[in-house]
Length: 268
Image: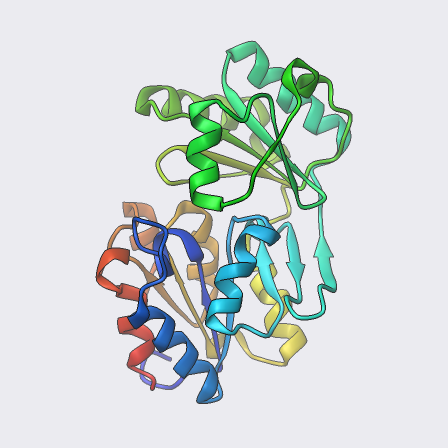
């Protein structure tokens, strides 16, 4: 499919179509808008929460169901209609919170398109807010006893060694009971075990009557790997880790060099 024109293009947001300053460059925006106006369907496939992804989606002009929270939610950005939503569950959410509290690690909860934290002044919370542009709701110590279902949980460490401990600890403690992925070299993303971007994209393609061979997927994080493997043609950004590059049909330049735009422009 690399030679033929895709019918559907799925793009990750952070680290892919946004540069290191979390900005959408004019070149990338124009490439994606041109793809849409020439008849290709463009959808977002992101770990971001729905309200955080919407401004980027609107700037590009995406009109079709897109993938949020790493695939835990598939929603139409125009009507707001939800096609799929899978939460972690109350019991497992409480168990994960308890584990993170015991370890002394930072974690935040996404539930009903809201973001919950212990302290919005925490450097890790502020780091995330700078990226997402979503102000969190602070609960103080009551946070640890919240009895809610979560769409996603996110562990954050700005210390590389603690981050590695967090990843390994989460995977060894919960295994296949949750889907775990990493991004930004600081985030441990946790969702329902049956959730990933590939499954969300498969649902969107099926709804639109598009064969996976006609799908182009572009991403950079470990949460993009399944989607890159699933698509008819999968592209990894130059800033991707080695395992994501290994899953791809092609590696483009990095997100600060408009690597995603370079791929899309080929089909215009």
